[in-house]
Amino acid sequence: MDNILQEIGIENYIYLSTLLFCVGIFGVLYRRNAIVMFMSIEIMLNAVNLLLVAFSTYHQDAAGQVFVFFSMAVAAAEVAVGLAILVAVYRNLNNIDIDNLKNLKG
Amino acid sequence: MITTLFYILSAITLATAFLTIFSKNPIHSAIYLVLCFFSIAGHYLMFNAQFLAIVHIIVYSGAIMILMLFTIMLMNLNKEDEKNKSVLTRIAAVVSFCLVAFVLLATFIKAQPQMIAYKTSGQDYQSIKVLGQVLLNDYMVPFEFASVLLLVSMIGAVLLSKKEHINN
Image 1 (cartoon, each protein chain N blue to C red):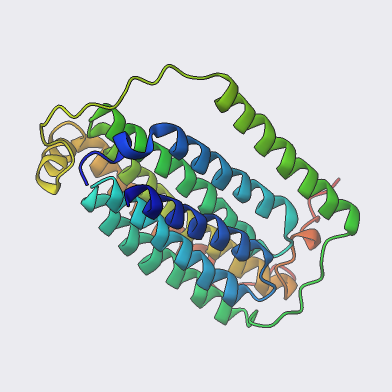
Image 2: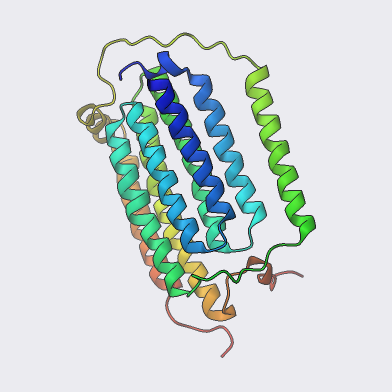
């Protein structure tokens, strides 16, 4: 189990992360529900984290994994604040359809 | 054996990510996203990064998805009443997805990066012991600032979701 990159190769992980990131972009563009858009952002963050861990293993350097740890902390903070904003939006508009959020439009 | 496992895990990851987006019911989206996170934790385990696999399961499946599920239930969204975007917007979304995926994949395939074959140096670099030493020696200050960030975001979440209306 120690030599996974010898068996698979780093290229396949690059392709997987790229596809996962594109799926996240697609989710943000495709849906109107703000919570599902949040989930798509989480998918994008996870794609980047996966690639960081792959290259951390490739270079045999622990710094990449520490960076992924901090990125997870930031993701947790982001989700907490974002969901609080969504709750506030829902209290005022009674839905979280992002197409209704156009009060700032000039 | 490992290659087969990689392909199965990747298929699960991509399929559940797509199902997250295509599910009409937000609860189903959340469940599929939990499956996606578990398969990514499986990828981390295949890299032998035990610490990150456990932290990933605890933080994402344990904390973040529970928060999202509670929000979905709080807003009573567990029904399929979402109107779709207009057909034009959806076609544009699909086209831009295909274009972005095509450009990025073509770049990474065509660039043919000179990847040196992976060699193990034999030394331990990602066990919990080594990671703990790196985290608390080299990255001590960012580690403390992460706790400040979490505290600030907690206060912000409490303040933002306090009950007050704009129109009164």
